[in-house]
Amino acid sequence: MIAELFAVRTQPEQVSEKQGRDLCSVDSEHGRLELVIVHEPGLEVDAVMPWTLDTMKVDECFNRVDLKAQHRHFSSLLKSRGAQVVHVKDLLLEVSHLGEEARRDLFESVWGKEFLATQSLNTLNVEQLITGYSREPLAFDKPPLMNLFFMRDPLFAVPGGWVVIARPHFPIRQVESKLMRAIFRLHPSLKNIKVFDGLADDPDVNIEGGDVLVADAETVLVGVSQRTNERGADRLAEFLFANTPVTRVVKVFIPKQRAFMHLDTLFTFIDRGVVLTMPYFWSKPEVYAEVARRANALNEKMGSDERQDAEDWIVEPPRIELLTKGKNGEFTSKKYKHAMSGLQAEGIIDKALFVCGAEGSWPTPEAHVAKALTEQWNDAANVFCLSPGTVVAYKWCTRTVSHLQDNGIDVIELDGVELMKGRGGARCMTFPLRRSLSLQS
Image (cartoon, rainbow, N blue to C red; front, top):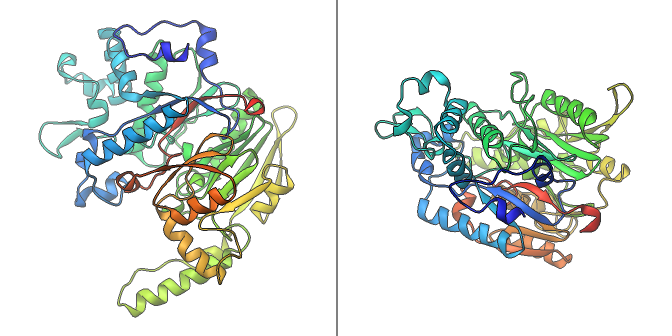
């Protein structure tokens, strides 16, 4: 039924309310992947140039041909393991084929009524909602959605069959959320899915899907990070407790650094109760402080003014706060100074594997962390679970891939050097809409 609903056609099928609800089902990070939405990058990446890198939130310019080819290969890997892969561009085209009223609604929802009043609808192409609107090179009236191929962030699925529209930290990424909210409201195959957009309308909230991990049907982890603030985590907890089977929300506090912009850049599930994460990150943050000091000393010796804030690791070490659903809409709070031990004590995590190998396998913790930071920068920890014990990971992260394989994890290696330039891995590039029930996986 899923495949039939998302075959590209000029008249998408109007599905029943029950069919729509059943499309969305995510109660874990490890259940077998059945349906996933992705975006293959296109002309929008051509707006990336050395003088727009910070604005576009990337670190390098792209070769669009190679980028598209690598993303297409990524999609083929997902399909080869039985997942139905749906592309945002196809969803947009199907909405546009519904008629002029739907097209107008789509453009107004993303670009606003005032701007659309100055344009002729017939001259606009729905792909411009992604590639941007400009009358000459780089003179964008409506900017390109350069980061849309990181589909994890503008929205996310939670237990109970809900899709939550995120409110990203940067305004340009908030446009991505507007686009996805409009698609889910207008597309006949998606419109009956339950969508919560209350967070997107709260100006004091920042929350992105890269910070939201579904441990099980009753437990959701939310990173409080560079991109997600504590109000976003608390507002999500309030919604989950009131509307879903979730009874526990774990706020995971991590350093507000670009290298760790989301929780899933350093912590992902690879099986039931098994995670891949950074060595010593949770247990000995002082190791990171020492590596930062050594890096600062090297930079100074070489005449560079680049510095890492070593003391932040000591003053604000990673920690967790467990929120548990109570009566009358209230919830209780329990804090753990040591995050990993707290997750283990609460039965959320049974085992951890580490970027670049097991803790204790290197001559010193500092040597391990220095190498792990290099692989983590290229998203070694941002793997994507296709089924229990099966993940997609970047081939470039050789030590991490070997460590996973040595511990019985089936690693599907993705050759994605061009994809890595965007600072996002396999999990970042996916929005899972349906997984098989984790108890049956």
